[in-house]
Image (cartoon, rainbow over all chains, first blue to last red; front, side, top):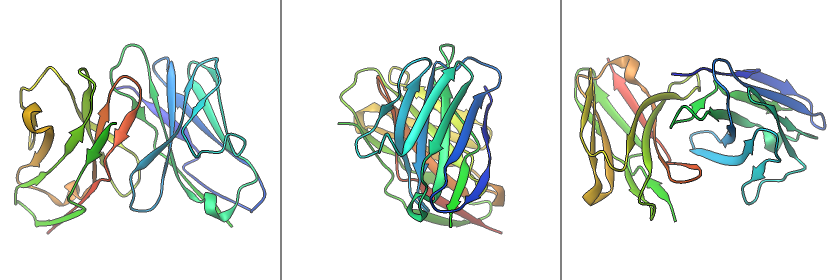
Length: 115
Length: 112
């Protein structure tokens, strides 16, 4: 299968700062990227879907100004958690889908801890 | 509405036992895909299998097998002769025309 790389795998930041998470498709062009949030021992919650070159589509209840998503190229999408607070601490996972594949492939996830 | 139900929150088995993880889905789409993913303690999601709605043929891959029954809207996953390395959370997912919907996951613990 295709490879999706997510960076960083772990990040600790101070409350009030912003954190950027990168998601890269290494060997295919990702026309669509998805960002998920996973609380401990819970399922994946879709936060937003982004298509290359256009604005992300956010799920209901997800703050657009808090979780900034950029999909500037066919191989890179970024999620920026702005003015992070402890309640934003979570596991964030991206997935990417290209036209050649039916399934999306997932990154390794980023564990964000806001202190 | 689309929904995926994994009623088993946690299952514990002894090594070498067979175990079946249940997945029931709801969708109004006529064309859809079903998936199983494994999430080990490290967190990444590992793709295991994909099935489209027109292909009800069961599949076996090594110790893994999948039973897709459209009549009962189920897509169950069986691990034969389980091993400690199979310990993980397993997610069933449904994809219709747009997005993936994940079940709540089943935590499998295989005890030595």
